[in-house]
Image 1 (cartoon, rainbow, N blue to C red):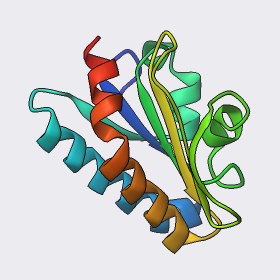
Image 2: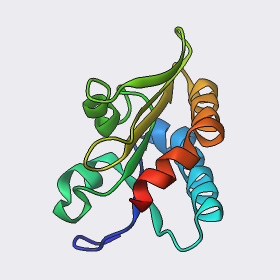
Image 3: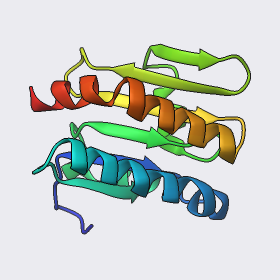
Length: 135
């Protein structure tokens, strides 16, 4: 994605090697689920630094994948979004569909737990998130 391009939904991962190995595949799987659930939605996967530094992406509904230690967007969102699901010490799903732009964050203590968080978000909250994105 080049600066100035837009999308309907951004799925954001960290840019570290660990995040590239473990979180980016989860983000692409989530992107596919989004696009199957809402044909016509333009969902893109991008890195946290790109999302945070590209003015064209401000206000785009977002799902951040990965913990605050690997994803700068997750670190930003963790204190701003309410927790809708938490397995104590394992993973968390945060979601706000009431704000100006829907936002979610899925992360866990390790790669498997982050995968469980993304799966739980997709199964339990994706429909609500997509409804909020549609307006």
